[in-house]
Image (cartoon, rainbow, N blue to C red; front, side, top):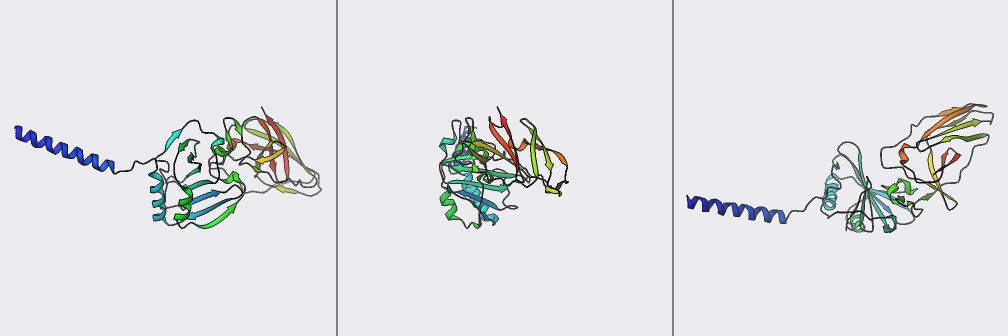
Length: 274
């Protein structure tokens, strides 16, 4: 009986040693890109150098898996006291489709990983080396910065807006004979009247942008992360007609106090949020 017990204890000790040895060599997953679907999606790498943003792609699923494994092995520690003052350039971003059809995206700056839900992690990794190491292709430059992954979290924090990464809005070119006047503005909706006095029908659409006035300059405001879009349809205001139009601000989330304007097809109305 003692012999059998001794053998059992020896086997148990050996099993524990083997488990410890294998776990020591195993890399813990940080789970930050969990749910990514490299078999059905390209991996996009964003890069902002302080003047221009660009995006390039990896289409090979095996290469994407290697990159995801490399990122997954990096230690990530959540931080609570991060602010926009911690941002330095260049800034990188990633985007890939998830297995449920949604998107997974992130931004990285100065050793910090900013997730799509606004959580920030200490993440010591060289995205410059990642950009050089793999065969990224189809590089495209784009403007404005509002299209960058997690742009909202890189331009607004608890203290309000920071113009460092906000993109100045283009100059408005109002159409002759067409005006937009404000009816009401609250946190969620903006109601306007569009009047056509040009003598011919005027066509517009659903597209609009929300802009912010800071130090005398109008800036484009990034939407909150999510699946947002506009119906690509044509709307007509006939000659001599006035139409009501409601713009929903849901995609911009809770806005800090400030002076804002809705800009659409050269027209605009302003409102103040206290």
